[in-house]
Image (tube, rainbow, N blue to C red):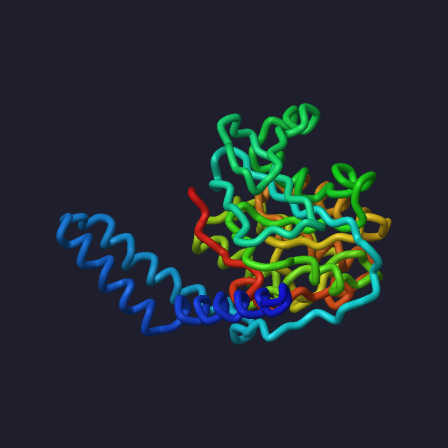
Length: 306
């Protein structure tokens, strides 16, 4: 079997698995099995928490801007001769366990930054968090600095970088994602699969108790005072594809870092649309690597450890 055929077969199997795990029938069956185990163990508090979470999910439905989209996305191949590509991730504070890629490809390097001295993974080249970044002395900020500064970390040795969150398992060859980059911004990401408006996103964060809601509200109110529009669009930030030679992309990422740090809200998805707008771009000026990260056959999203 040729490499292209193998990759295609693996991606189709992964997509079937994703669709199965997201099916109504599977989710109902999974909940029933979990409830049976909890009842046997007499974990009443855990059961109550599950009912509370269901109520939260119903509340979130009030803040959905569009129906969940399928991925159904392919990349137009371009003539990029022998691109040097690095895929990288960063795990701090034990938030995730490093996940080995299902497949590795010889023309791509895989680098993982971590503060876990005991991390041992043959599939990734393990690197310590650089000392000057450690001085920030905050696990989330350390992670985001590395996430937002691929040019600083890799610009001398590579043409393109692909950042993946620590909870993402790489299933296939991500090289094709570089073809999705829009040279206006030098970047490509997934579109947000449910929301277009950061106002609805922060209300979802409030319900799920993600980030600092007071800071999020203050952040969005300030953006609105500047004229930031409703329904500007949103991006998923778990995978970021960058052309490291594109100065505009480097500028956007660096501005994103500064705005994220300044906001103190701990949610990077909120600052990015504002930065894109502030620099005179639209969401469509960021290349699209998929309409739904959760249903992209090239990757698999897992739950965070904490």
